[in-house]
Image 1 (cartoon, protein in one colour):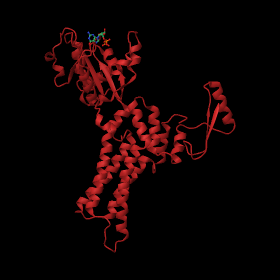
Image 2: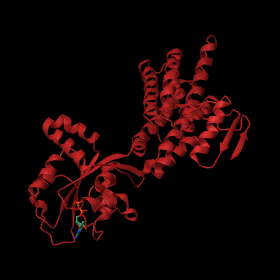
Image 3: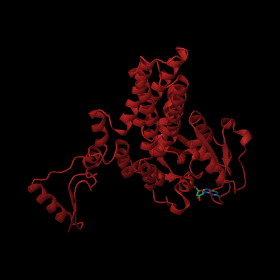
Image 4: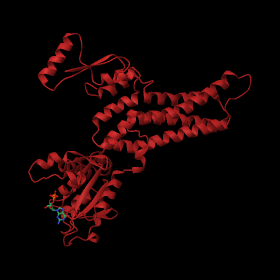
Length: 393
Ligand code: GDP
């Protein structure tokens, strides 16, 4: 057993902390916890250590949330984005925008404080320039949110097609050649298909075929309105067809059912003598159709490109500070609305500056920024955030 003492403020929580490390015998560990509790300690709440670190000012709220994301991360890209946020990249991006507003607020307030001199510490043109800059910064962050959500939440994917067309082979390809999975044991496929896989950094959750059947049945029954909601169950559907066989009723049925869902039509087994003729398949007019052979690897680069396209992966955005959190996205939306209100106010008053009105809008934007990083966040929001954590974090 090793006990390590971290005197305040040099600990995770900034308080005095003693960490006890011990070998993994459950009985031994229980005894250590029991003795500690008998001596007056209590068990930590979920996320309590991180909450205390936040209260102690060691980390801000974005960083605290990143701790939970890091613990939950499945793909290396998810981990990297969470780690970036833990390092403070998003906090710094928001801080820079807030600093710009702070500067503007100071000048506007000075103009109000010295009214008699009739002197404005800042002119309308400078205000517009600053607001435009902040607006652009918020829009960039919001633009990253779509990619951010993709990184964080991944995509639900389904593979459909009649038996023996190559669905399991496609699944293995998505999983990655180095981790090919043998599905010859009956009953294993279902479990494996529930697995999340990492495809180019994006977490794909495979919806099993039974699940997608139900969704598609509903699509059929309830028409277009349902169809629009169907992607919630599967964001992207791979429809697999067999190039060595004639198009069958089953193929047409699957194609008709998936017509309203974002899909990648995969024609597999192009290495075999062809019986398939695209011109005879009315159901795929307008679809991107990828012809491949999972046996020989022909066409796989095109399948990769089509898959990334269907997943809406935009590689260019991956290196920016990324908004991955809906809470952050919503608050940035509020900040944007305040900035735009300030800008339109300036326009309608014909470029004449009304400092008070301007200050009210800027205060709204700054409040939203502060709520993101946690300098001003309601208690119930804090509670909800830290309830996500596991015990001991
Ligand atoms: P599933 O029933 O739709 O899941 O299809 P599988 O992935 O299990 O594949 C069915 C059979 O087709 C297996 O024997 C595969 O080895 C074979 N297969 C899969 N893809 C190809 C291909 O591109 N070319 C050829 N010739 N055979 C393939």
